[in-house]
Amino acid sequence: MRKRGSEELQGKTVTARHKMPAGFGPSALKSYLDERLARVNAYLDGCLPEESRTPETLHRAMRYSLFSGGKRIRPVLVIAGAEAVGGKSDQVLGLAAALELIHTYTLIHDDLPALDNDDYRRGRLTCHKVFGEAVALLAGDALLTKAFELLSNPKEFPSVPPERLLDVAGQIARTAGSTCLVGGQVVDLESEGKQVDLPLLEYIHVNKTGGLIVTSVTAGARLCGAEQQSLRALARYGECIGLVFQITDDLLDVIGDRETLGKNTGGDRVRGKATYPAVLGISESRSRAGELTGMAIDHLAAFDERADPLRALALFLHDRDR
Ligand code: GRG
Image (cartoon, rainbow, N blue to C red):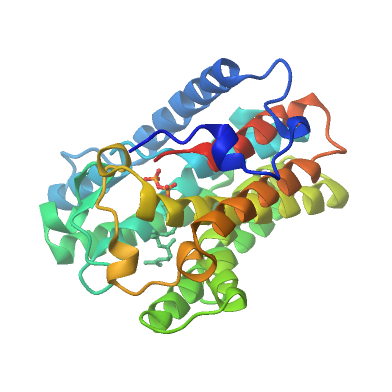
């Protein structure tokens, strides 16, 4: 695939003032990500049962999918959201891990033959291809359950008042449930092969993909005691990058590189999926992604340099090639 330079993808609407924050360029972002991801990965490793623990097949399947090279976007957003309001990553590691566990469960279930029937994910065979459908289904269930085990344990969050933790756990449960993530997935399935207009497309993506992203950005900040005004701004930022994330994902399914993505491309068209390129065309989809990226960064105007990782992440999500 021809590498899409940021100038080209950013189109007309991500302007010079939306470039990487001064002092927080690509190498600073890389160090930031490496450092945070190492901590998230260590935490995830410590909270899951070892592969040797009975039932071994189940624990192997859970670990297989969790440690298969995901980008860890949601945990990074949890940490960056917390840091933007003065929190520390250590305060929110359990939350960051919980959101990645939920995300990984959705991917395992989404790949099953009853849903997208995908053979490859993150460059490897999908969970059900390696462990069989029944174990994959149950590995997804166990990851989801593990997330709420973490969230219901105040010992994982020693500096957080229990009522605040309960509040955040409730927010995550609502996001993962029938009126957001699972609901968005159902509407997506029901729309396959049908003519879909922009409002319906955005309904699907706001719920299926955007909800978990908004919750990632806001829940860490909420856990750290952020004020309502900051939470509202972070939520608007999250809504914008959630859509950018999905538009880019849709574009990559059309123009992305199979090797880089680690999964097959073109599946959306074959399945008659509702996507931005199908509804708006490629050029208009790119412009929309650029416009939303600029809007996301503008929503952070009241934050100081502690929000620079969020600003840089907006641009990163816009420019990503996997
Ligand atoms: C409850 C089964 C079920 C599904 C809910 C989230 C979801 C709906 C399905 C997951 C499948 C999917 C393709 C969702 C769209 C969001 C998306 C592009 C997910 C991939 O996320 P990345 O790119 O993945 O962050 P990595 O592999 O980097 O973790």
